[in-house]
Image (cartoon, rainbow over the protein chains, first blue to last red):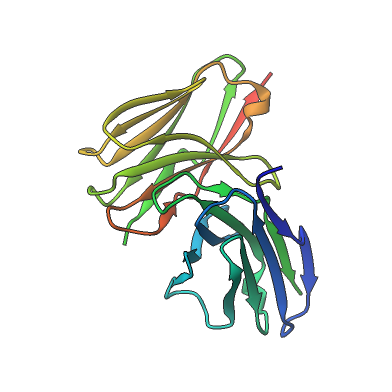
Length: 112
Length: 111
């Protein structure tokens, strides 16, 4: 099956902990993305990774860091989570920057 | 910074009646527009991509783009209860790497 796979589906953690989310795509795409979706369903881009070049959204707090071992994987690490980090994190991939995106089913994070 | 706004925030239609969703954007040089659907607790499914003024049809879904009016709409023909979901408009500006999303329209289709 070719798609974008995210793990875990759901994660609950306490303020100050570190979390990592995994994303893998089997579509052979060159570009991957992380989006954050808040409680009002608004999606905001966090990172894009295209052929080993990382593009960072300047509004993303420094406790967030993407990690990529190859073009099929783009993980997300959050050091010292805060309550406002509670959200759904969506990973996506595309063949190129202007092509259609394929999204994963998301990782829902709850920080208590 | 590109701003994308959707209306209405929520819409209820009867099964079989046309559903129309609206999206306005602020950057008139934008050249890449998409409509996505998101069922509860699931990922996003692309419905229609449109890159030039006019109309683009994909099955029961039709997008209309008018860049002069900074407006793109989605029309759903013969909606069914299974079409109940959040519909998201997304816009990419010329030369940008970011796909900017609107805040969505919650569509409910009543049997």
